[in-house]
Amino acid sequence: MTEKTPTEILEEEHRVIEKVVGAMAVIAETLDQGGHVEVDTLRDVAAFMRTYADQCHHGKEETHLFPALEQKGVPSRGCPVGALLQEHKAGRALVAAFTEAVNQFAGGDDSKRDAVISSLRGLVALYPGHIWKEDYLLFPMANKVLSRDDQTDLCERFQAVELSVGHDVHHRFEQMAERLASVLGSRS
Ligand SMILES: [Fe+2]
Ligand SMILES: [Fe+2]
Image (cartoon, rainbow, N blue to C red; front, side, top):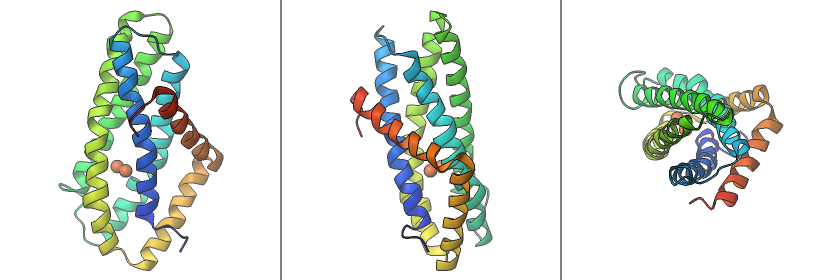
């Protein structure tokens, strides 16, 4: 097994995602007060949420962790896996709405400012609770039901997800999260 367990890898990614969620809260507040936020910053946030949070992180959870749990008898519907999948779906819809609003806002349509703010606030409202459920409910349970071999296998599958996204891409988004958090003085 690599040094980290699958749930440790996912928890570390949660800490990165929280940095961007903190930045999103600051951006929404700034825009709501009529302030200026660089379009490139909005586009960075959208790209991070699509690629790092959804494609890479949710990809590891949905394509590999959840099915591994189901194989151990954890129900695929209801609590907790079904509920978490619904939240991924809701997050994806909000990111799509945010991306579209950003494109229109960047094109000079200031009437889209509210749509940018509301999609950001939707994401800020969704993510902390979602991450909490995974860190404190799902992952401790996963650590109980998955054998050492299951965990080794999952780590290898996670590596494959990162390679498919691009290992450098994954790392670049982690640096971007750090930058967004420091520039915007967000909470994490
Ligand atoms: Fe998740
Ligand atoms: Fe997660």
